[in-house]
Image (cartoon, rainbow, N blue to C red; front, side):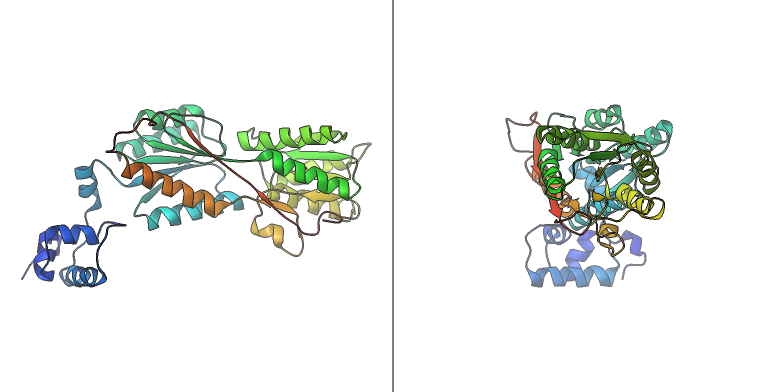
Length: 343
């Protein structure tokens, strides 16, 4: 009998289960081929002995830690929270360890956290829209990590860029406002200046101009509910008040809608048409019923993790495209609700 559970090895499990050492390894390797009967025998023996896989030691042997960094800004926003939730779920199902780095803090704090990730030999980093600065992205890349960029515009060799088609969403929004009889359009943005937010603004203004319509653009603060409230004051006190506003995110749209109703006694959509972006849960609440564009969050997460797994499987295979930049562009489908007339 073993006196110390901490000394239990895979060989001990193999002997208890009456299988080979390699069979035990396959059972504890995500995605490995093993029969149900074999898995049951090994798992029963492991439970009886109190055996747990030493993933750190396994990673050192395979020169892979299994750690994937999520470098995130604005984690409190509903959209970012849903994306982080989906990514961590898919990473866990793939046997990965998610390490979260919050880039809302000071540059020094972010650098210190990132250095920890590098010290733990993270295999990859998934960098979400917005911050961090490009230097952090390149630091990850220079330390041998695979890089996945979500709604960013860098093009690093051997990386995957997940992006949205801003032009198609802009065209749909302009057409919806035109059908509603709106002629005085506005775009409400934050001052974050991230690639994804700027693309939405630029595409909407360009599409409106092609339709012979002018657009007033107002920007303020972060992409928050409170910024939407302030932008409502700026837009709705203009001499030529807009009759339609495309908000860069749903959260800002909710703030703008509440302010338009409570402070200015405007009716949505009779007096003011609104469209948001992200399709957060609040957009579907009865009090908002906001027409919006849904980012395919689950598809982002699934495709990102599958790409990582594919790259890992191919790492020992001679290839000619290791330095290529991979880019996938997705559609943000419109979700019609009641904030646009005739939608």
